[in-house]
Amino acid sequence: MLTFESTHEYYLGKDPSIFYCAEHSSLMITQDHEDRLVISGINKDTMLKFATKLYRDDLNKTLESIKDKEVDKEVDKEVSEV
Image 1 (cartoon, rainbow, N blue to C red):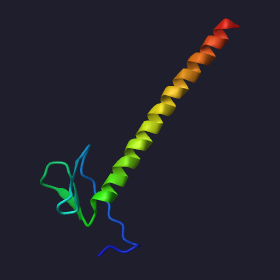
Image 2 (cartoon, rainbow, N blue to C red; image 1 turned 120 degrees about the vertical axis):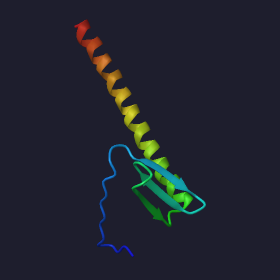
Image 3 (tube, rainbow, N blue to C red; image 1 turned 90 degrees about the vertical axis):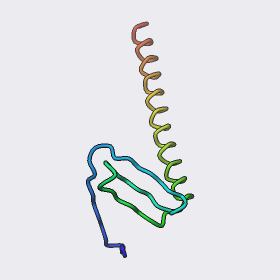
Image 4 (spheres, one colour; image 1 turned 45 degrees about the vertical axis):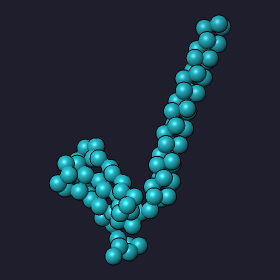
């Protein structure tokens, strides 16, 4: 059983695949389906919260990037008019 002090780190290679099975409440991370990490006891709501946060964070980062580009264009326009 993992305790608060437990830390386990695994390296599965570049861009492993991630699968979730709601029927088994399990998250599986694998590179080649031979070596894999299976974490059981994760319910669907937890996975949805996780996925929603990832999506929102990525969307916010993208929107900030777009805003920064628009601000840069406005500044460039103002500078060129001077």
